[in-house]
Length: 152
Image 1 (cartoon, rainbow, N blue to C red):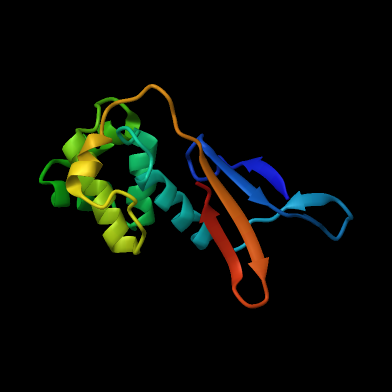
Image 2: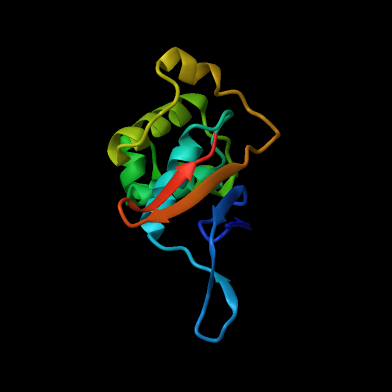
């Protein structure tokens, strides 16, 4: 297993533990099979981090749900420019919008939200300067196929 800083999803704080494989030329490479499963695991990691979502995290979650900025704006009863400003980091994301987004992502993608109540979810929505690293572990076997797990 090797640790790899995965930035291709648009986030700077995702680390994957995965296997190295040898390509046809004999070079060691990192392969990311089942990218959809990986992005679901990253989404689960994002919705369970403390603090307020960053603009990049908000955009990542929106795109994982397959929504445009306009569609998300309709859901939040605001204009698409507000969504764009949140995603660009020009305007802070309101903690209430943050909580609703996390709950909606969990519901829509069938993910586990570690906070079991709105009160617990609200308690964690305090702006923080420290970015929580999201660690994902990849495993594969014949019975279960590829699995990505958010490390605790």
